[in-house]
Image (cartoon, rainbow, N blue to C red; front, side, top):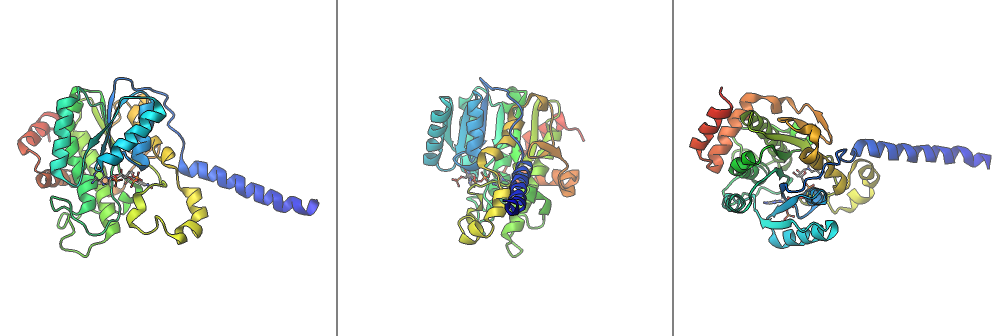
Length: 334
Ligand SMILES: NC(=O)c1ccc[n+]([C@@H]2O[C@H](COP(=O)([O-])OP(=O)(O)OC[C@H]3O[C@@H](n4cnc5c(N)ncnc54)[C@H](OP(=O)(O)O)[C@@H]3O)[C@@H](O)[C@H]2O)c1
């Protein structure tokens, strides 16, 4: 009996330690119990993964949730699931393809026309490390969907968000932004050899820079904007990397993944927290790693880069520059 005691206690300690480490690494659940009846929330890319779970969490808290997805059939199915699970009937599906500026404009026009208010906009959708594809408007796909599509969408909904203030914008970036660099000479990868990873990192850095610049421009409006890294989660994001379904990743990396990777439900907690927490009222221009505010990468803090990216993004998506100068003149005199 005694000879088993040591190995058993070693294994027990290792398992206990692993569980504790997993809890620590994957972060906790949203500490706020706030409900949001009467509030309208838009979540992009909400048919699966973190977006769907975020929509579900917020539907549970009584919000009117609009799922904005490129595939309306998948979107309707997700909305139905969420209505069934939460018994909240105010969960609706709308078509939004962020790889098409026309689609972004149509979606925004419909929201402006049909919705009385928009209290929370969660820019969640993304594509990661896809082949060198271009959007309908000729942008590199990752920059086009992850940054430029959301950039235009947010700007087109700004008046509605301001009219609904206090309101919140939440941008899903990633820890990957740290490895990013904005190459103004070749934003759309037309001159260099395409690097899927660097393109993803650039797009996620662009999102933090956009968050910072938008927050400066929104000072005094009652609209806040923050960026977050949700943690590493088991979703469909890796669909273009080959790791998603590979036997190697399942077996060899399985234990490491188990330790480090969150469920989509847990990865939806940071977005939920930023959307509802009373203590975050007025907090803007910040970057959160999970539930914790931290400093982003140095390039993400560079105001000059952020301003330049704003001007370039506005030019690329054809944002009305007269409106642009009016916004700058009013809220960000510099
Ligand atoms: N999972 C992670 O480990 C992780 C880590 C760091 C950051 N993030 C960030 O978290 C967010 C959610 O990712 P996820 O892990 O939940 O990924 P996911 O499971 O792949 O979900 C991505 C969502 O974006 C949608 N989408 C893609 N292209 C679109 C387009 N052109 N127009 C509209 N929607 C589009 C997808 O729709 P379809 O299903 O139709 O393709 C899907 O609904 C992303 O911003 C991601 O960068 C995730």
